Structure formats: C-alpha cells, structure tokens
Image (cartoon, rainbow, N blue to C red; front, side, top):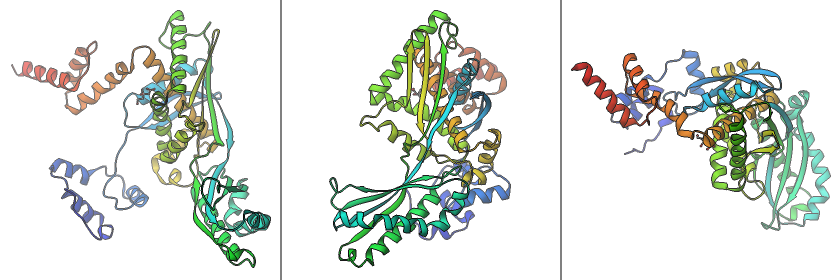
Length: 440
Ligand code: MEV
C-alpha cells in the first residue's frame, strides 16, 4: 500500500530511491530501480533535469527503420517503441515502396494556434469598437517576444475575436494563429498569449467606457488542435506492373482490393477507425519520441482531427481505380527540430542527425511517412496472414529472452515453433522438456 510522504521533492535522489524502494517488496525490483542504466554523469544530469522527483531512467528500445525513400531522398528513420513488430513492419513496407518510386510527401500548411478565453458581460459592439486599437496594442506589447521569431520568418499571423455567447453566456475568445518555423513553439505561443491576456484585462479594466462592465480572463493557452498544420504523405503503384509485397500478380489485386475495403471500413466505423489510427500512431509516435517531440500533443491533435466532421474516422485513405492503387494520409503534426528536448536529449539529437538535421517541414514529412508505412504494413498483414503471424515471431524472441534460454536452446525453440502456434506456456514447457532431456 502506498504511503503519504511530505517533502519528498526536497529529498536527495538517493533518499528518494530509498523511500520508493520501501514500496516494492521484491529485492530484484529494488535493484532494478537503483541500477537502471548508468549513463555518464553529464547525461544523467540532463535526464534528472527534464522532470521532477527523478529516481531512475525508464529505458525504451531505440531502433532504426532503413530504406525510407521520401521525395527522392533516402532516410534511415529512428524509432523508439516497446512494441515488437512495429519497426520490422515499417522497414519492410518502406523498402517495398522505395522500389516503387518511394513516398511522396508535402506540407500543406504550418499554422499553429493559441487562445485567450475570456468572459465579457458588456455589449459585443463595445468589444468590436476597441478591437483595432487592441490589435495594435497586442502587436506592440508582444514585440520583445516575437522579435526573434520574426527574424526567422515566423511570428503572429492572425488575431481573431470569436463570439461563443450563443453556446455559453458571455464567453468570447481571442484566437491567435502563429508560424513558429522550426520550433514546436509551445513556450513562445504561451508567453505571447499570457501577455495578450494581461493586456486585455488591463486595457478594458481602465477604459473610461468599458470599465463599467466586467471582463474576466479565464485562461490563455495554445491549442493542441492544429488542423492547419498539415502534412500529406502518399504512395501509389500501377497494379498492372507492380505487385504488392509477398503477392503474385493476381493475388496482388485481391490484396489491393482488401486493403481498399479495410480503409473504407475504418472510414465508416469509429470502432475500427480507433484501432486503424492506433496502428498509424505506432509509427508516428515512435519517430516523435525518437526526435524528442511531444507525442501527447501529436496524438491529441491527430485524434481530434480524425473526429473533425463529427464522427471519428480513418486518418488514411485509399483509392483503387482500374489498375492503380493509391494510399495516403493527411496528418496534422506540430513538431519542432530546434529547442526543447531536440537539443537536450542525446538520443533526440542523434535522431535528428541521423535524419540529416531536417527542418520542421521535413520532419513532418518523415513522421507522416512512418505513419503511412505502419498503416500499410498493418493492413497488408491483416488482410493476408492475420496480424498474429508476424507478432508471434517477435513475441517468441521476447519469450526466449524472458526465459533466459541459451544459444543452443534458442535455436531449438525457433526450429520447433517455426510452424506452430506460439504461447508463453507452450515455450516454457518446451524449454523445460529440452532441459530435462539434456539432464537425462
Ligand atoms: C497493433 O499495435 C496495431 C494494429 O492493431 C493496427 C491495425 O489494426 O490496423 C495492428
């Protein structure tokens, strides 16, 4: 049972570990906590500074998926995921499409958004009356914050007043559009919004006519829903010449037909769409995490976008005309390649170097391509062998690791389960038999 502790944050790291260790009984779990990875002191200091009450490091596999050909340029894509088969699937789909012209990707727009939510109990006309003056004040008062961003070609793009009083009494909003160039821009956007919020309250509160009414700022914060920060990635092939991977020519048409149907199902059924999109985020998140970006923001945005028309639907689409197969994804992605974790975390830095130090637009294309490949690979498996076939192969190697089989035992297990259903109990029992035989 957990215990209440006061002043935990003031303890040293060792003291924190000691206290947390009292919550876990198993000695080996305690040892894991204490010994978890021992990076160089300098690196550990960076990790310790990323969050609060840090007592250890939580390690995830860092993988690469080679053979991504995007807009004619080849990439070896870094992926961080704990889920087996994800990287293998992405790499195999990427290679298949690399041999068919690769993936085409383009950024359709790069606008990020922030909001100042406030209530106002006066007439709307009074707000409109001072709006132009306010706009000018906003620009002047945020100059010191926007100067650097403007020098990089970004900054505030648009400031709009939104009236929500029909759905919520006295509720208005200032919606601000930003271009944050190669940074994700969360701190920049929030700083600008908070400055605007203060100014709005001060200005209205001291205005000779308006101060008779009440304006109350509720909050000022960026919106993680950025439907105008969109990238499209697509692949296509001619079914008269090409074959879908692992299929003969005729079979290839059947597979194309089934993938097309599978996408249609995800387009019309939210239950399937959630799983379908989860598969897309298997790829997207893995690259987002590897490059030190915010996967919660990216997921929140992607799912909000998938429900933008009132029904949750597929993020990818497919077109099958005569002999042509076309498969694409439109994905809202707010990512950065400068600032934040991208320069702090050694593996995020390495990931970006591996990708040739892309700018934000290029990274958006790479991430969307990873999502598309992941989705293609999942659908291809689902409509042919079924998903368990590939999963089980990877699952088997995890089970073997878990059971600490020797090299000889591993080979025997792999041979034995080549054409059999894999289960943890099955492998454990088979290994026990093997060991008994060896002992006997
Ligand atoms: C598993 O992590 C992802 C899949 O379920 C995706 C899908 O069903 O499309 C295989």
